[in-house]
Length: 106
Image 1: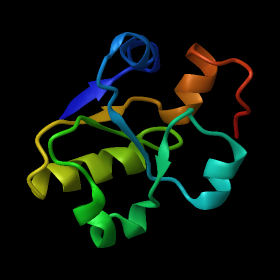
Image 2: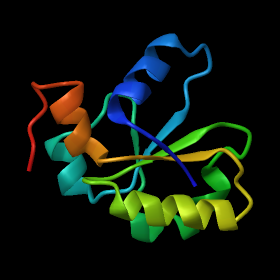
Image 3: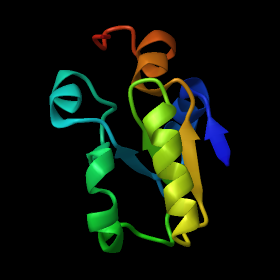
Image 4: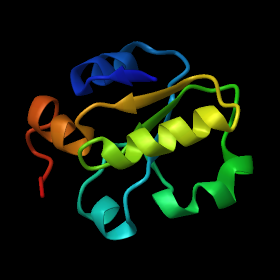
């Protein structure tokens, strides 16, 4: 499974003409507290119900708090036939520490 660091994701988002889908798999309360701009909330437990809404032709970057839930979702998506899935190493916590120091952490 492919992974990406917070700083590399930041660079990718700044330079990409076709930005990836940022799929945040945390719970709504976590998402409300802090999130990466332009990310889409889809709690981990709801991913199987919403598979048909995810674009198979687009890069999907899975995001959670520290990277564990998102890793499980990324693996699941790969098993379901998605081919370009990347997990954010360290999750939103790494983003807050390495990219956006104004983002609250928990």
